[in-house]
Length: 561
Image 1 (cartoon, helix red, strand yellow):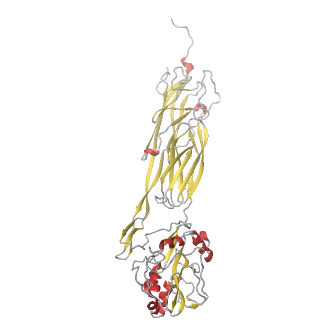
Image 2 (image 1 turned 135 degrees about the horizontal axis):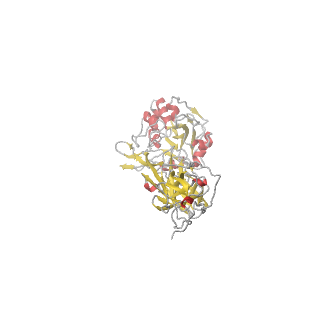
């Protein structure tokens, strides 16, 4: 995202463009190039330049330390004469680092690209910057540069290197043909005590150096803020003019999905979450997550996160009413790439294994007490959501009279943190049809009732569910062989289902008549309180005391009239 504020812009000014491609494929590079120029004036028989006698020197530079890593190459639509004077293939960076200027006659060659280079040097102030940006950011041209410099293409565009572009011209000076970049012309002018400038000022000190300059400071060179129509000094040319830079953004990382398989209960509102990472996701380069569940697609947008971090993406949905195995297809569409994964989901019905009908002559002489088992317990959950915001950074481009403001800002991120907590309790009591119960003491063979409560509080209530299922386990079955799925009596409240073996169809569970005296402890697992951070659950217990058995309330004797 870039914002532009325009003021008195001449037609040739280019506004912070990034090099989108149409005819040529875009490599992801961005061109830091602008230009100016003006009329050429009149040449002479010994000092002249013809339009089209031009090209661009390309040097691969390491971004981290500005080191030149390949021998520069010169690209041109025209071949120079065999006797032309030149100064070798030396870059502006090398000259600025102290390389001496040394003239050589002959032996100079250029590379003629299969697709012609757009016009580089202007003669009327109407620079071809858009076309040059597209050309030098194209996959075709960057592949050609990689081939001729010996760089691996993928390494070249990986983000660690930049291309330094320097326009050059073939021209006649004092009767001899020369090939120079703008920097070489400035250095040679100093060697000739200003003669080159006097003879060729419109080319060597105006249109050639103003053919390219930087919009934004880079590689140690400043953005040009001086005149775009007047001849420049040698000092300005050496320090600031006659160059453009192509920079390659690091290839977007493919989205990474960290996903987990799930087990859900039937007829339950659940939350399925995945964690997305890779690159940076912001409003300019957003990430979208799609969940395909049971033939229905759920789309999640606004999935943002900074470079090097991640973000949970989740969807709330309701499970089917029958047991089954399902697959959930997750597709993540990130900046420039797509990732997919599959979640395996098991839907189970817990209401299929209730205790059998207790009878009065049941026996279990080998019974021994077991401890209440540990079950998955999670009472709190926490998650976060990245919230991007734009940090403006306005930069003035141009001189005092003509120019524009350009916002070179960036995305910053705030982290909104959320949490949820589960509170739960259970209570068992003697069934109200138990004639001999006393408080929390009862004889074996009679029934008990149960109440379970649970509630989730959260700072993001829309992202959680309340507890939806509770399952009770009993000591006579070792807390595992049989269980009762409780009925949900309202939000956060559960009781036994109506017992088909109860004479009064009470919500009761009958203790076995053979149960030993002592504590009778029921274990209840409260589950299916879902959050983006997983399921909240509680492992609850409560106890009554068994003393005696139901047979002690029976006696044999005459029937009273």
